[in-house]
Image 1 (cartoon, rainbow, N blue to C red):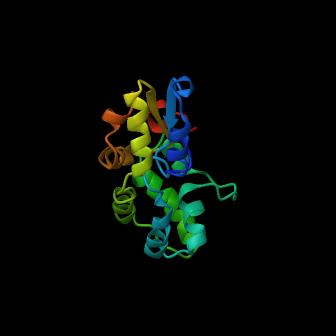
Image 2: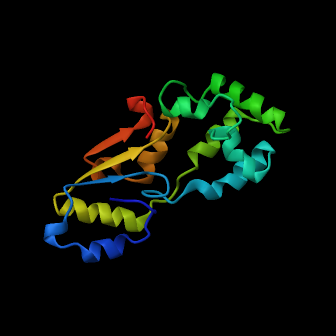
Image 3: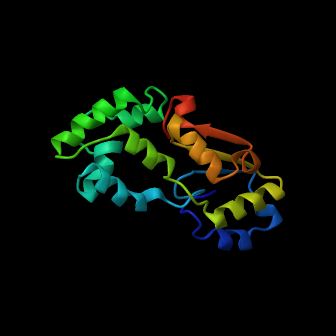
Length: 171
């Protein structure tokens, strides 16, 4: 039901007739329910001392370098963002000439999402007012749950929350 973080939801809502109302709506968090955190990459890259374009693959995976992916393990609830995570990421960052500091990274995570995507929140509220069940489906880590909860009122907006770190599987 949702994708694109606020783009087109008002057009969808305007075209919805009572016969078109879905039975359920499934929404992601980053970039859909909350403004995308991608702009925060520069701050993270500067903090770590690696080039802007390499910071996400270095820390979050998907680098295609055949190395382990501790962030993916954390998203599956198999690893906390703690000392083991820090050591594994530090090894990778140091090979790139940077420095990884766990405390700074946790501070960065804490400020990652600071604004809900207002149009998508209104869409979820509208769907709920029409009796549509709503679900938040997200890849996340345990340490981000308080950030997600303070960014949007999950208990008010969603009938269920399926978080990868709680179910042990990424979407």
